[in-house]
Image 1: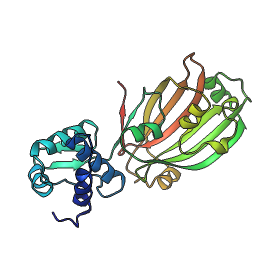
Image 2 (image 1 turned 90 degrees about the horizontal axis):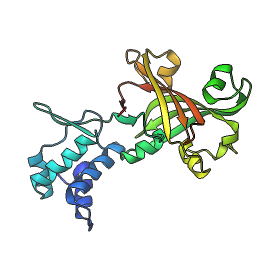
Image 3 (image 1 turned 180 degrees about the horizontal axis):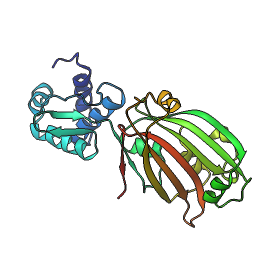
Image 4 (image 1 turned 30 degrees about the horizontal axis):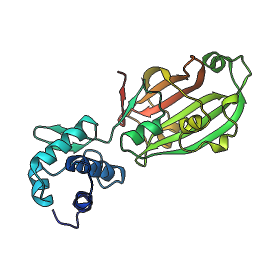
Length: 246
């Protein structure tokens, strides 16, 4: 590999920086940043330990420890006969009281949102029941396309009692970031997961092949007193998500 290779150029620069962070952790961080920036793509095969070691003048133990960490985080997948491959599937915890954006950042990925709708409406009886409201109560309907590392991964609709949102235009990429600024703290969630084939509109919104099913995630976020804060339905690419329940 030469210095012109974008991956090795990035690794060389990162590893040359003065830092108290262990070398293997800086190596792993550089790989995650390369995935986030599109230098490495899903299912791409990485060079072997020996090639990394010789090209970067680091020990194979350092490379191995970095790959162990990346495998634990779900960034790479290692198998005999195929080597080490990039795995860009996004691990999403169904129990963590954090939104997709916060979870993506914690896993070294870059979240983004394209808003389709932010409007105040009168809720249906079904939504009212989920949120502990009477039919016709005012709620905000929030609909958006969610992105991770510039890849559309899901379409999400959520309903929030109107009293929790002073100005919907202040909600940026993350609804939960907005909640935190308002001292609204989701602490637990209740989730149900099912699967179905996508309709044409959904295929277009997230560039989904017709033969790839979507996972439908219905989730209720609650505060410490058990009060409903948000009810959401997410339509997620089954080939891009790995859901964690423990």
